[in-house]
Length: 155
Image: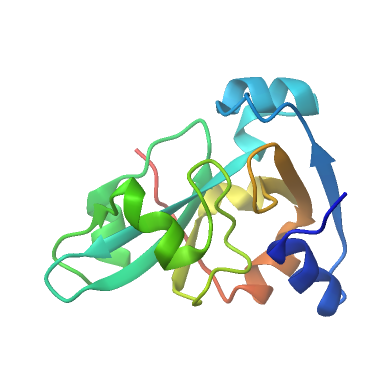
């Protein structure tokens, strides 16, 4: 398999992970969790947001089965208003496409928050940097490596 940017960065920093490939036509959390034979709450997605007023960007990593609470997101990022970026902005901003966005290896490291449900698991699944690829990674390693703040983020 060709290594993604996220995988190369983890390798370079000697952070262990497990790569899992699956049919890249599957993008919904329920199908991915089913293929992985895992609890749906253990599969996380990476969301990129912006504060339109000051053009600051923030990354939120939450269970794929949940919805980001934008009010909580605004509070934890000390902004009055946070909104999702437009899908067309994702690739130029992060280097990743929709469905393959990883919190590891973006073009620029943005302030990142992870939902506190991560504390329920020793490891979670995140995008490996392309559609059809998940990375299983130790939660503590992930939190420290991306310098994430762990807080309640979902509705």
